Length: 143
Image (tube, rainbow, N blue to C red; front, side, top):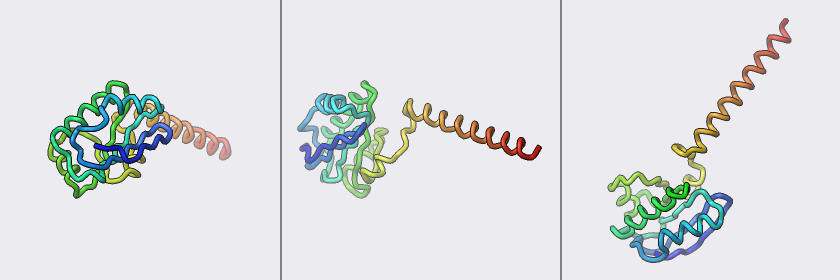
């Protein structure tokens, strides 16, 4: 594997890969170190330029996911839906988060993540509070 471009954007690190997904190149440990150093919580791995993934590449992805989860980070994989990488990862049903574009992976909600539940609960509480205040105002003005 070869890294074509690396972008650190806030809490997201985007790695665009070029070449076969075969487990060669950067180690999962090195990718994790890069992610921690830039302060990112999410790694978007863009494999749209990878022609295929072999068994070593799949093992590399699983090790990478395990390393990231161990330090509280997330991995999202971007691949072409009709491509060989997408097909291999889909058939193996590894539970990897897969998206057809970097934009969709970036904007996807954080389901199953500790922050997702907290923020969702906070939004619900704020909505109920606004509704309560609105009802009080309406009752006060009609009395």
